[in-house]
Length: 362
Ligand SMILES: NC(=O)c1ccc[n+]([C@@H]2O[C@H](COP(=O)([O-])OP(=O)(O)OC[C@H]3O[C@@H](n4cnc5c(N)ncnc54)[C@H](O)[C@@H]3O)[C@@H](O)[C@H]2O)c1
Image 1 (tube, rainbow, N blue to C red):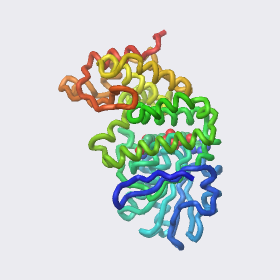
Image 2: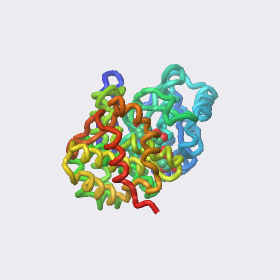
Image 3: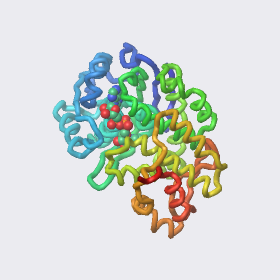
Image 4: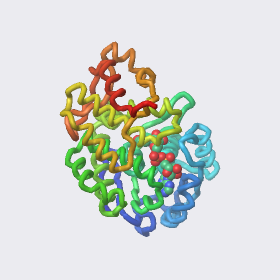
């Protein structure tokens, strides 16, 4: 089993990565004997892994709550349901929530843990690639509001993260690729050597080779952990993790969150941001082609739909006013592995990057 430490003073924790972790007798949960545990999962993941997990939680009183599957259920109604369950099982401050599922379950269970009795422990057991490499590490938890994604939330670090790579065997191919977009993101803004490694190991990764997956997930988490350690509450460098995300959010909004998985939108968003970096002369021409080749190997989309109006995209990004005021905050790249926060791109340059990233309209 591999480990990565997230060093945050008294909120430090360990991420365990390996194969067969959930079934191991010595699963590193460190739950106090006799305490109450609530496993929060969903209708898709629970039938696959809940029993195995429950059987490894020794000496604790284990309860479970199975929520419906999907981003559309990341609402306060389901926050209430988790809190109601905690009350029903008479959970006290020494209770622990185990989140078993993708990023949606992690965010929901994490926020319930942050808010119940002003904060109880939780352990992330991410089962999607996106949640293993990104969402489960860093302590961002939350729920969506009708008027905005992740509008309700808190920083609440888990007490451990258990990444069992065997769970990826059941993850649908499209979800697997969506997770790879976040892997490429961290390499593109932070770690050129890792980007090169991804290029050289793309075939093994797509074949879900255990050794390749373990190395890839570990390296992604090391990078994410170093960003979080530097800037836990996103007042600086953590914003780099938003590479491609401003464009992705606008695309998701304009397509009603129905056409693209988040990772797919991020892949397209990274292409737009790379083109903007080239247009701005911040990085050498050819970087976006290099990134595009890798994203393509990972079966990710690269282009914005041709029918999408670039002006609508700009407006959705709410950049208009900010650009005029000279304060648009976008993540660009200087070179492979070196992202930076830019606030000097003008509306015309952003427009150009969006247009250059569209498919031919029909
Ligand atoms: N907290 C953070 O820092 C952070 C970072 C990135 C994303 N997020 C959040 O994460 C969410 C996206 O996460 P996601 O991509 O994991 O989505 P998700 O949780 O919806 O999971 C994707 C799908 O895969 C299924 N699934 C998960 N593991 C599986 C497995 N092993 N086998 C079969 N099916 C499995 C899920 O049930 C779901 O249908 C969003 O809500 C986003 O806001 C949070």
